[in-house]
Length: 129
Image (cartoon, rainbow, N blue to C red; front, side, top):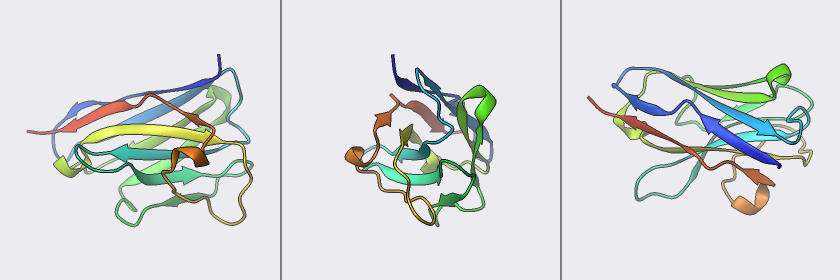
């Protein structure tokens, strides 16, 4: 079965850190572009960070630059999202998505489901005291 599975979410105090994982099964992520997205309560899904296939060029939304870091581990077929300095505004469901298309330049953060072949089911992140 071809799928993405996110993990690493949970309840965290403000100022804390998390590392989210996105593991692919049934296919290799090595040549896929992968993105991380967040859907906060009552809001639309937004793009956070992405990493290109074939190389490690990344792109992040201005709102999260400096706090969110995306990386990949080919051996584990996993893409990570390291988050630090968490605030209550970071609360939401975090999704990863993957697509085999090759894009010129940096990857883009479009949250349109149709732009990504695979989506995970999401992992809940809650920030509160």
